[in-house]
Image (cartoon, rainbow, N blue to C red; front, side, top):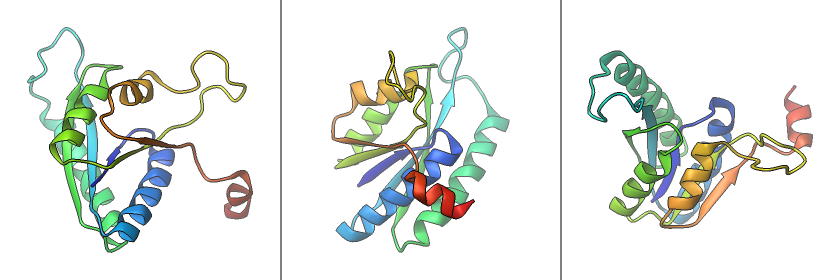
Length: 147
């Protein structure tokens, strides 16, 4: 199983494309995880009906995209504190015995200063029980060809 947390929309699309290709080649499936961030002041099980409904719609779209590759896709919402998404992703990855996590993320620093990725991406990297592939986007030549 390949796990794909849905983070930045543009980069998540690239990550999902890579994950689906890998899963298709290996005869595997994809687990899509939509993060629902819960502020520290609230309990993790607080009610977020509108937010959950919006995430379910997003998960449905991404699941349809994954299935267009001929890949079986499951989807779930993961509740997490801001900057601590890694724990929820790790739990889901262990639960499904994931062989890979594919994260789509923009590079915050093109020159490599300090932390090139967001806190959530670092959290996933630190807590991951399996290898993590970071998809930073299509190569520059491909971006120019699309534009």
